[in-house]
Image (cartoon, rainbow, N blue to C red):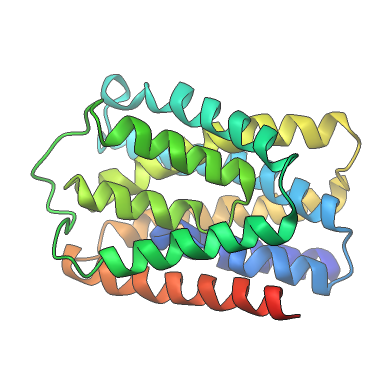
Length: 244
């Protein structure tokens, strides 16, 4: 029964995470409630996110929604950001990390009402003064804290006027990059409970495929309201964690 529940958690979390980010809002607290040790829960999420995010990216790449030549540079930028964030996290308390996360999400929520960036697809993704520091900074955030990373990236790609379905693929590629190193670390340190991780992974793979297929059918004008709802949920979760 525990494995079935983890499979369903993986499906639900990754479907939502693919569409608007914030999948960790579901999977991580649920695993803690189930009594899974915190490091094992984080490790399971990193392993499952590594595989599921690559599967959804590959699906969109195979359907020619994304050009590898256009997006390949994201990998080193996000990877280096994640490594930097992991190092910084070792120097900052958990309470301060949560405060930083809340400030970033509130800022993203407020700027979403600016009228800029509606996933119009008018601009191709380029290495410029917004995309590189933006992706690197979000990579640092992912290494620092994690939940909300995909949501922040979608805000960035919306601001850059990237088409939504392309933005979904790019977020999944960046997520793969930032989670890959973390997954190796958790595996190497023996924190992974493999039967539970595999159950979550299979659910995440299923959710990733469901998510990319739903994403193709969503109209650009409804993306921002979905992002705002996920952002508010993330802010509430972090605030509750701070109070408790």
